[in-house]
Structure formats: structure tokens, C-alpha cells
Image: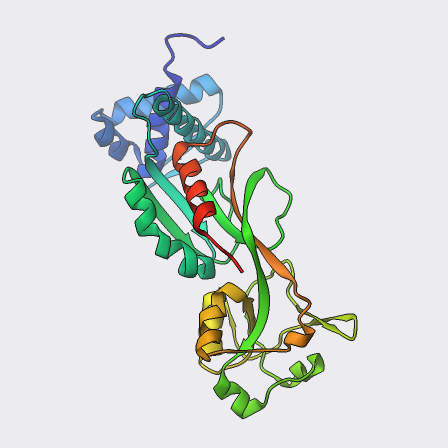
Length: 301
């Protein structure tokens, strides 16, 4: 049983602040303590745990592998404690920092337009939004919710499905005037196919020709790190891109992009999920409020 005279949550809080502020002196100022007192507290923590948490030098502070693990778990524990205290308060409401990671297309077309309304509903929440099409580690990146498209890998993450969107191959009218419009899947061999600059679960473009699935490998003179960049390249007439329908719907309706090979489109869809860390217990109110908000407003087609 833990000794009653050890304030473990207090030690965690000081240690976390040392890591986040980059040193003992900065943490000491934050807690109105002396640097030596903070240093002794961390040393006492290391002695109790029996491991070295930080490597000390005159220039910088560096975490040991054990220190990284203890820091990550301390952040989780402190967040849970904070949520537990708020949860029993009579005026408990979503509050605090909410870090959200989303793909650039989803962030551009859905998330960012909804931010003003969400913050108006939950003024005590502070949103920290990161847009990237690359998959991140939620724990390492200290992310509360990530929006991901496509198949989900097996993991400890919990997922909430927001919907599905079909995929479509598109190009600009100016591009088709120069290169012609493909009539069959094999015609794509003569076209400039724009692709993602990183490995995806399905890297090729699936099509169906006379009942047989054909997987086209996109080959072209440009690639990009996110779907919105590929959309801009397609709009500029550089080549063809295979993108989510929600991302290019307005462009198709306005005639800025034209869909091609729809008769060969297998009708495949990509599911969009909100994923988050969870162990079966109650979610922080800020996370629950955000998930409910998205589920009620996002309509994928």
C-alpha cells in the first residue's frame, strides 16, 4: 500500500511540468519553488521508483526511456484525476485543451467550418487542431481525437464511425483538352496520375473491367503529402487524382473537375472514423462532447 505521506500526484505534476517546460528552473518558476527544491523532488521520485528518469546536463534535460514512459502515463493519470474532480462538481462542463488530429481534406471541408459553432457551445474548451494525412500515434502526440479514413488497423484505440465516402477519379477540363479523356482503365497508362507521397493501406486505384478487378498503379510526375494538395494539382490541370467524393463534390458541380471512368468505378468507399484512447471507462467530457458534436453534424456521401 502506498505511504500516506507521499503525494504521488503532486510529484507527477511537478515532473510533467519539468518535462514540458524543459528544465527545473522553468518548472520552479511555475510552481513558485526554488530550482533546488524541484531537483530534489525529482531525485526523490527517482529514488522511490528505483530508476533514472532524466539525464541532467548543463545545457539541456533529456528523458531516459523510463522517463518517457513515466511522463506519458503521468499525463494520463493527471488528466483522469482532473476529469474525476470535474465530474463530481455540480457545474461540471466540458473544459480544457482538446487536441484533434484530422486529415487535411476532412479538416478543410468539415472540421474547420464547424469550429466556431463547437466553441460557441463549449466556451471552456480550447481546441488544438493539427491537419495531416499521415497516421500519428495518439499517445506519443498527446492527441485526444484523430479523424482517420480507410481501414483501421487493430489497436488499443476506440473508434466511432462518422460515415463513408465513395472514391472518384477526377481531372480538370484543361487537362482533358490536352491529353484526352480516358475511356477504359488501360487508357490510364497514357495519363499523368497524381499520387500520395507516402505508403497507404491501398496504394493503387481499384477499377472493375468486365467483372474483373483491375488495380492501377498511379504513375506521374508529381506527388503530394495530402489529399487537398492533390486536389489543387488536379484543379491546375496537372493530371488525374483519385479522391474522396466529399472533397471534390463542389468542384464537380461547378465544372472545375470532371469525373472519369465512372462505369468502371467499383463503388468502393472509405470509412471515416473518429479514434481515441479508451479503456472502457468514462471519456473526458470534452472528448465526449466533441465526438457527439461531430456525429450529429458530419454527413458524408
